[in-house]
Length: 367
Length: 192
Image 1 (cartoon, each protein chain N blue to C red):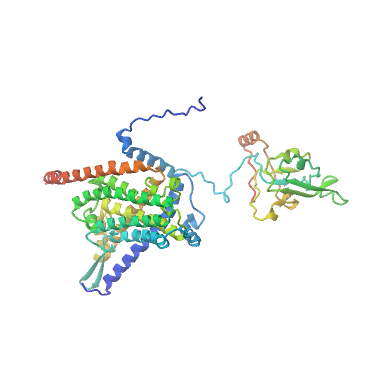
Image 2 (cartoon, one colour):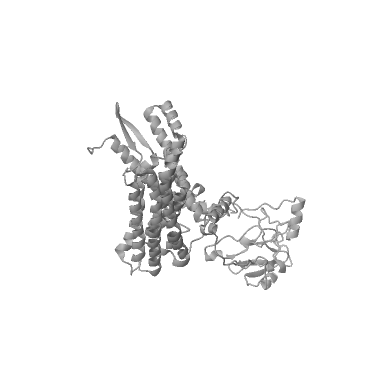
């Protein structure tokens, strides 16, 4: 394909920029939402001083972060100390590239020549592998930062983060394997397209979903698995020595990871941009506004459905955080290695059995 | 020895399967927190909304005047003697001719000062006063101060404002409760 600046290219660029901006915006307001949800669950009001309902609170927080002293401990390895939060932020932002936020946008370049641009930064056929690869790189940010701080608490936090991420990645991968067996594709877009309408994977993979979401909590270092930054034992864990915007980056990266993993849960198990009755809505919109506009409007509705699902899971993360206490470290490891991995393997075997024996049976019964 | 009847026997029994997979307990917990999410909030947004602290709250001091606006204080010094924190100091003075509309009796406090960093709001000055000249308001705090010269309050801040007099209808909790039952409305809160 010739690389030229045409309408499709511009639409794609706008979509990429929008996805980037929206990811950042949602992460920013997740900090606000976190505080509000925490407050509401604890029968409080939460931030309500900066702007109406405290809506300017994230901006006030960012300004505060920027004006704090950017301190580097004298015994720290300076470059690695700076590299840590950069890596965390970079890997967090990279993951949203392969997530399909919507169906596609149609654009008539010339009469009879219609461009069809997917609402996704890049549609790679190894989307899930890409996400897993980038997420595993994310642990380097924590590891490097914790090690470079030259502080025993930071190092302990970093070691915990690394071992926790490695342990839970296995069962997470095995949970995904069951999905891959069902869909036969590594492209997230394919997986989403196969869940057309209300035919979501959650109905076929309830066990896989529970395993996946548990591991997602562990991967994001969220309560009940927030041992890397466990305040009661490790002060602040890997970011004990960090201040100013470097600390801000670490915290911000956590919120981006939270949104991205929510988006992954939504697209892998809850149909992504699909929702029941989507064909009817699309037909109505096309009938009302014409082929191209109708299709684009239907895409928009789907994208909104996708964001609704993702944001619900962001809320779920917070909900769980303010409900559960932290696991003990041995409980965490027990759950990961002795609980979730065998369960995930059982899930894979069950899925395989179902595909082999149950599916032909159901198909023949339906005929 | 048993202090309360809430003590619980701890058992170290093996967890059941349902307990081991944590999920039922987690779902119960999520149910409890979401219930609180929609519950009425207990927060009082302080500067905008003020809680009625009750009729016996001891807030900022006020030097009362009588009905004609004359200062009741005679600078006898009993409040200063009673004060356990030694926060009160005063200078007595004799009333001159023509000042009868300012001071009720022949002797008055030319200077009356309370050090708000020393005051512990115990209310002993109120009890010691034979002229019912000093009270601790039940409806106002001592506002926050940030400068050292704001610490010592003189008569300018303490003397009662005749346009906005301090009134208290109840003197005990029981009285306040009785008045609530009779439908006597409590004094509206004045702005700080």
